[in-house]
Length: 294
Image (cartoon, rainbow, N blue to C red; front, side, top):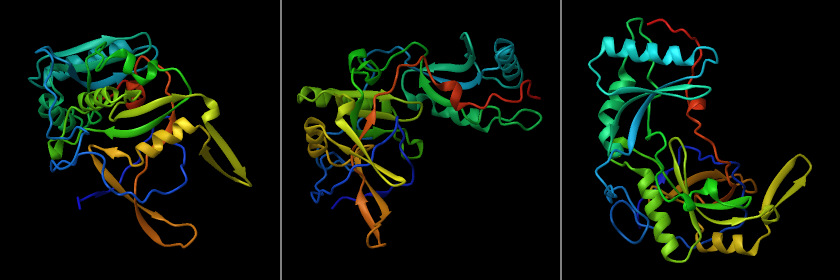
C-alpha cells in the first residue's frame, strides 16, 4: 500500500463546496512519485520545453501606489543593481501598478537559485523587500492551449480533480506544464478537462455546469451544498479522490457524530469557474510603506 502524507494546507479556488457521501474504493487512480501505478504526471516526469525559448521569470516586487508606482519600482531596480551583481532586472508598467522582474528562464527549476537569493536579500536597513518573490510565467506568456484554460470556459461550476504545486525541497517543479500534460491526457480519454494556473497552484478540472447543478440547503444557521446534476455526480464518481502532486492526500477530520478522529482521503469537489483577470500578483504583495527606507 502506497504511503500518503498528512494534508497540512488548504486549497482555495472560488468557493469549494462540501460534498457528502463516502467511497470505500481506496485504489489509487493516479501514479505516485515512487513510480507505481498509473497516469497522473509526477515529480519525476519532467515535461520538456517545446522550444528553447524562455517561458518563466522571477517576480520580485509589485508597486501599486496609485500616484507613484512607476517611480517606486524604478527605485527598487536602481537600488538593487547598486547593491548586488544581479543581471537581467527589468520592469513592466501597467495602468495601476508596476512590476519588477529578474531574468528569464526556460523551466521553473532554472529560477530556483535566484529565487533563494531574492528571498535572502536584505537592504542596508535590514528590510526583506523581496521575501515574497515568486516564479511566474513571462508577462503575456500563456502555459497551455487557451481553449483548455478554465477562465475561458462557459458555465458556473466545474469539478476539481487534481492540484499541482512546486516543492523545491523535493525537487518538484513545473507544476503548470504537468497540469497541462494531465489535462491533455484526460482530453485524449474523452474528458472535458480544463486547467487553471494560480499564483502558486495549478488545478485540473472536469466539466462545466450551470448554476442549477448545485443546491444550497439551509438548516438554522448551518448551510451545506449538494450536487443536483447527474453529469456532475458522474464526474465525482469517476474521480472520487483528489490527486495532489500525483498522489492521494489523507486528511485527519473529526467525525461530528462519533467525535472521533478519522483519516480519510481528500475528495474531489466542485468550485465556481473563476473570472478572467489580467493577473492577481498585486494582491500577493504588500506594497504599503512607500517610500521604503533602503
